Image (cartoon, rainbow, N blue to C red; front, side, top):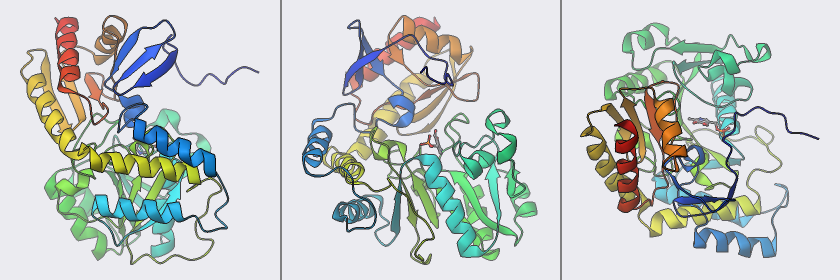
Length: 374
Ligand SMILES: Cc1ncc(COP(=O)(O)O)c(C=O)c1O
């Protein structure tokens, strides 16, 4: 059997990885400024992560959600403490799209309404309503088209005021738009959402799948602003590569048996991975590191004549170049052996390195970027 070829692939076979580096089967070393789509939060093959998973594997890796799994409670408690929402509840699942599907469903159950406001350039996943909420017609199959989606321009207060009716169940936004090119919400825009959502008996859903888990320098990117979401979705950096996702739910949202469910979500191994990540974020002060390293990187990038703009927070940065980013990414990879990310904006290079990347590695990247852009 052959694979279903849905991805254009680089001709690189990665054999192992450590910290911010990857090695291919020829022994070539690569610097990782992309974290495999913002997934690698604590660095590749972190010893604490490896030990936690190895120890768990010796005990039990999976049993169904019909029994007590204390690791789930431990994970929820640690997450609540680190993200400063200790009173919220946690529903565990396996991916970002699944987290969003469940959040949309909860909002609909809670409000007994079916329409959601989403934004231009947003990405929320590839499953049924998540892909309908995503602003990418080429990945939307006819079966996923939905009349329940109200798509508005980002940061447009007038559009929000006009379209936020009492038919709306929820407004859904990324903490920082990622794939769309690294765009922050404006404080006044969030203030309007904060005002209109309760007025219309709608919930606020913050998709922190890419921008969460310390990447922005705060646990969640929305914590730079004065807004408290009703539902927060997480995945990517949560497992540092182990498939795990989650929905954080405000305590006013009441659970009913059967309302949500999953076979694999919250399994023993996934919880061990999730706990290891949180422990490293805490022990290594990764939020502070993301803030510091991000500020350093931003400052240096801004001084380059070929850089038009740098957006983002912490180690979630979008760099607008004065040439198409695709050619620069290719040169960085083939000539300098550095992985970087793209976005839906042709000029934008997306940077999402592991949160404990060293200053030396950032300097190596900056020197390489200067050479390929010259
Ligand atoms: C903001 C955001 N939401 C949701 C998703 C979907 O996550 P997953 O690929 O784990 O389903 C992504 C993935 O890139 C994302 O960036």
